[in-house]
Image 1 (spheres, rainbow, N blue to C red):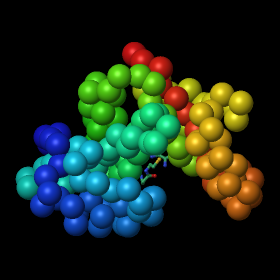
Image 2: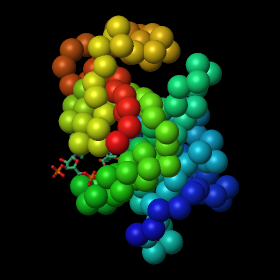
Image 3: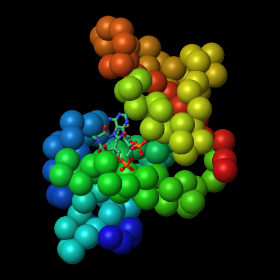
Length: 143
Ligand SMILES: CC(C)(COP(=O)(O)OP(=O)(O)OC[C@H]1O[C@@H](n2cnc3c(N)ncnc32)[C@H](O)[C@@H]1OP(=O)(O)O)[C@@H](O)C(=O)NCCC(=O)NCCS
């Protein structure tokens, strides 16, 4: 498996994987993505997404279902962190927070969130009900 910056020709594959794993389909500019490729097949993707408030978000992390649980997501996160300066934010379902803790992300309370993430998580969680489907916001402050 190799990790490489995405190319324009990867655009449709990125969209297909995002739809396949049911994550946010907005803001998928291929120029911000890295991809994990194996025998000419893209098996995982991830991006760093800049926001208007100058924060940056680790986003669109996805591994194709048949290759999940084999370290590809871990390799993608490590590569994205290695090429980034802190802080980085991310949003995820509450059930995934332990996955990101292993990379040094910490769970934020609403008062600690930048306003964009606080508004987004309030809005999403209004409709999410309780439990592990709620949206969490996390921050990575460096290695
Ligand atoms: C979440 C995801 C990116 C992880 O990538 P991966 O390559 O499958 O995971 P890795 O092989 O790197 O890591 C495996 C570990 O993560 C844990 N893990 C994977 N998916 C998990 C999940 N949904 N909830 C909790 N833990 C999870 C596994 O239990 C495993 O733990 P272990 O190392 O202690 O055995 C991948 O499963 C995926 O694409 N899921 C669907 C899309 C998604 O939810 N993306 C995240 C958006 S925030």
